[in-house]
Length: 111
Length: 114
Image (cartoon, rainbow over the protein chains, first blue to last red):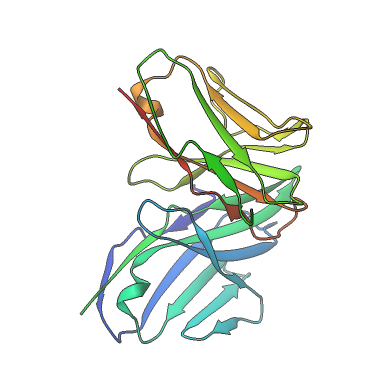
């Protein structure tokens, strides 16, 4: 089983739609969680951290469910500029500190 | 210099040659990570280094690949005797302390092996 699993998509949605991505992780010792965004052929950039209580940043809401070991990202009112690949990232320390990236979910927002 | 600097941006090598990829972390960051991204695939962890130390190289192929982060100068990822399968984007990231601080990525080096 992969350490971090994501639905690769692509998710094709019209502008203004709400879209949600899920991510599951296998290591229960995982401590911190993040969503990164990667545009085509560019470097990943931090979108937001994910806290146990859930957190919101504008149109983006992240949730963490430790019991079920999954993380979600909700994007409301999708914009064309949201088209990108969204990477779920899990940090844990089992011997070494490690950030593990999921393979990403691709989002395509169309006019 | 505000960010992680990688060079070259693009590197073309023939099969059998050596590739050297350089990464200068953000100012004040002493922890460097290398990731590889094959076309249409996700980021794969390769190696985690601190100054003069390899902390975790569990993602590095056992042969032909090596990495260093000397006391002075950039971190170097070295690939000897490159093969076509090494063609990928190689990203370097840095963090100040190796904890769960968010990583700052460089623009990457795109290696093409002909």
